[in-house]
Length: 130
Image 1: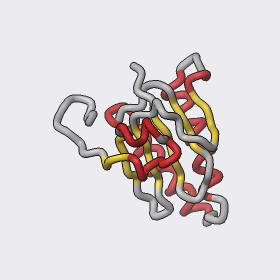
Image 2: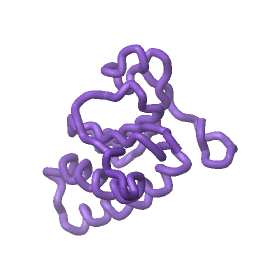
Image 3: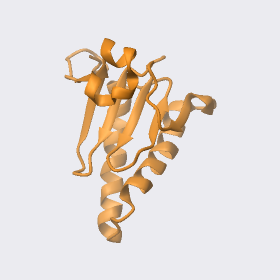
Image 4: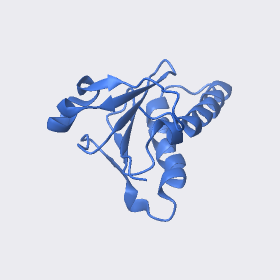
């Protein structure tokens, strides 16, 4: 299923882009489990000074396996927002996750990022898509 998305980590300029399987119903369960473990490991180790760098690297590895299967051309890391992204997953330094839905303003000027998106509101539909 083609549902492109970005993963954004506060404090890190890198943007992770996945060109498929990026719907909240697919991403959120995996992302939330992964982040729970990530934060537990950071707390136990006492490490915090390089958290944004570690987190973005581990998101690439984790979602490389989850989303890409055998075709890693579906995943990239860069500094520019892709106009085809439908969802943006923002991981805050306060350990929260927010999901944003792109709209026409984003498609016209993706460099506006989250500022050109609307907050995702979970629906009762199967898969939790907007």
